[in-house]
Length: 361
Image: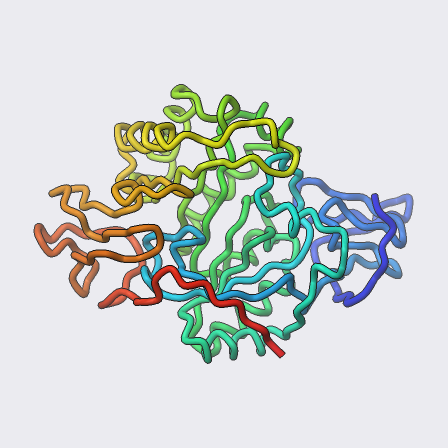
């Protein structure tokens, strides 16, 4: 555990005191036990004056307006802009982290921007964003800030999106998702060995989060699986994973198979071949996944949405640009009338692939 240097501390929730006077954080299954002045594994939750606090409330590593497809969400308000931000730290320890400069940060200089929940909601409205995304690092660890932002956004008609690994305990999970409209869950692999050795977490908790979202909420969610050569990309694992998704979550949950690039502590592994992503997409489709995508590569076929009945292209995508739209106002195929699962508006957004950094006073 690290000794905390408390800056913007905010009362935290989900903890209890142990018999030896340490405080146990009950936000995620790490259950960090902290003495006064110590931080948990996530870096942002600490024991200060005999209570757990969130040390980064109101502070961000930066704000940016992105296409919603970048989260990635292909069936949630396609084509619309989303105001994205994160903080610092993470409750996992992925050796392949693609955002390690943020999620593994131990420097408060990373948190250059400050903004209240109300200021974020106003900025999203002014920028004509349809949603705000908690991303770059896992919003589970800044629970209180994310919930307050979500409440402020809801008051002005802005939706909220959680981009998360799904590693969270049941009670905070229930509260967190009461305030979310959509989520992308990073299902990193489908073996305990991978989760234990490569992320220092466990698969069962993530599967519980997916089951909870499907069966106990109205949150629209999609799944991302980053394929790392030799570690989680075998046909057997992909077959087992996608079969489980169809059996337990249904055929309509979109799955994004994305390409790994060497980063952080895995600089010695080659980038994922586009052929591997296409193979994963084909395995998913063969097992009944209706909406399977490739990501982090230029693949218009693998990035587009197709009708599962007539197989016509419903939404064409070239990277983050929408190239065609064949859904009626009710979200059904204009050719055969089959409903496409998702959250759609009468017409798609026109934001495209733009990325616009934003400062919030």
